[in-house]
Length: 56
Image (cartoon, rainbow, N blue to C red; front, side, top):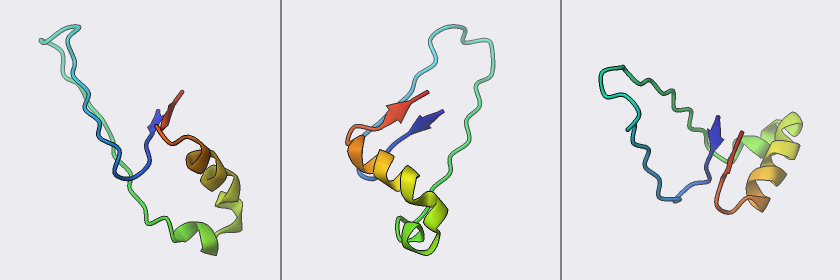
């Protein structure tokens, strides 16, 4: 899982085995949702502090 802030350039390339298919899922949301959903406040703080994104 990779979390990226808005306006952060990014690109992934698969060089390990061109014969296998790669797959990704992208989820985007409006950052205004954090104000309406208190449970998301810890996630908002984490993304705010990770100006270059984060990975797990």
